[in-house]
Image (cartoon, rainbow, N blue to C red; front, side):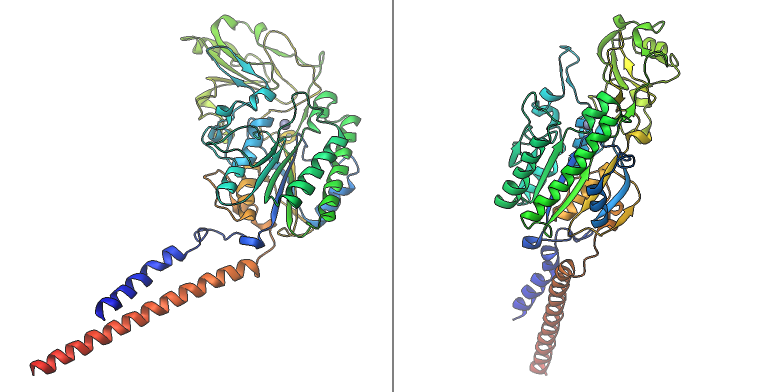
Amino acid sequence: MLLLCLAVLCLTASSPCDAAPPWKSGLQPVFTGSARNKLLLISFDGFRWDYDQDVETPYLDKMAQDGVKAVYVTPPFLTITSPSHFTMLTGRNVENHGVIHNIWFNTITQEKKQYYMTQFVDSYWNNGSLPIWITAQRQGLKAGSLHFPGTAATYKGETVGVRQVEPRFYDHSNETDWKLNINKVIGEWFHQKDQDFVSLYFGEPDLTGHKYGPDSPKRREMVQQVDRTVGYIRDKIQDYGLTDKLNIIITADHGMSTVLQDGLVEKIILSKIPGFSFKDIQFQLLDYGPVGMLLPKEGMLEKVYEALKGSHPHLHVYKKEEMPARLHYSNHPRILPIILIADPGYIVNGFLPVHYTKGEHGFDNEVMDMKAFFRVVGPDFRKNKIVDPLDLVDVYPLMCHLLGINPEINDGHLDNTKHMLVPKNNTGGDINKKYNGMEALIGFSAVIGFLVLLFIITTSYNMCKRTRE
Ligand SMILES: [Zn+2]
């Protein structure tokens, strides 16, 4: 009997740890099990935070009424497509996830792969940080991705379960194609295949912003195309009866800034800088917008640095270890020893000005033109609410929370977005009550077990005492 009681005590004492839900230490997820809502993450590349302010956007306005709008979202630095999208998917700053540029490069062979071909270099993406698709799949959810940067890669032997990678020379601006892609994601993936999470990417208004400039009529037209598309997405969700089961996050990877044109400014051209020579450079990543990187030949770092530092009033020159900590763009072996950052309006050229775009991004993420838009709507979000700016790293913990999955280590904070959520006293509360109830039962069992044990010991002692007497 004594042994039995001790066994009961041991069992009840060890149970609370086993019974505790995995999210016990933090905020509990809004839904679990079959009650979990689905999530659609949409990125409209290069949609600057204020693009809805000089053109009519009825569908985006309606979405803001029905959901939450942040004043803006601050992307990570470097403010370009692949690094920023991988931050969305991992919640890590660029120096922590390692997708440091749109271009894959090898400093020894001098090989460079442009944005599209870099999508297929697994080792570039599979670099220690798991995108949310893989984490969700490992925790029993179904994930899909259409055209999102990083979709083509394999991560620790796994790919996103359902995917569509864009063809080699894809027309990223075709509204008819956008509709077909939306039909696929909503009708096929969410409705028929019952996916839990899908990321969906559109290459505009980035392309139009580059080509015509962020203040051009063409850009305003493209924002109207985006706006119509947001309306189309919400209509499709309604048609398939998913409005009350699907949360939507719409954001972008960066903004866009007007490039100052010839004749108005003194361009930054490295070959014209006195004391600087390409003979001292082993590898360069230049002519790619406002940021350049250099690997000087052995023993040449100081010479190159001294020649460039202070050479142009709108060029900032850093040794890797001198980079401002707030940019989180230093602590990764892929980042080259010298980093050049131009002020807004300028770009970093090597031999000649080869960039003739009217808009650019890649600048310091504190530049207002680099901020992106952020909207959410769905059953877990509040309605008609405008919230303060957030960082793009904060989107990942929000998504994990909405999906009820345990996040990987990340640089974001759920505290920065939880005010967007509807307070949960129903489903979430029930889960809490269930566990509180279980813990109460376990505690009660432990007390009963202890009293029984005490009774046995006392009775045995009295019996022994009487026997001796
Ligand atoms: Zn982009």
